[in-house]
Length: 119
Figure 1 (spheres, rainbow, N blue to C red):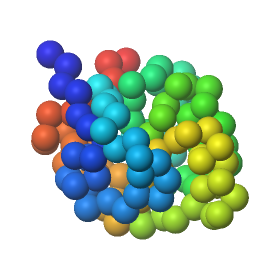
Figure 2 (figure 1 turned 180 degrees about the vertical axis):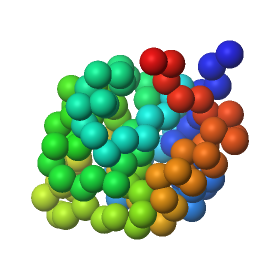
Figure 3 (figure 1 turned 90 degrees about the horizontal axis):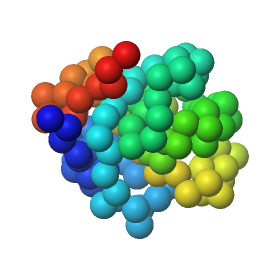
Figure 4 (figure 1 turned 90 degrees about the vertical axis):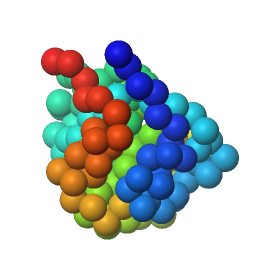
């Protein structure tokens, strides 16, 4: 059974800060995917999936566009540059950041019912 989760709830679970997309926090995701290899995201992710990553470069935004990902959480307290934030706004992406490491962030979401992708 797939459990959808609102970005607003994810923000609370991860004590995350909203960087862009404050007006879209009621959107829902069905799955989460944690990766720093964008090739893995391209290979396995297809929409309705939250991306958790420690990368903060333009490739992450471009990968999200190509994979129909609309929400990204940067882990380990990583904060993207103003250029990345602007690119995300142009593409209507929700960006958040959390101080949790990738493993912990994914575990907290899984514990609350958000599943990973089946590969």
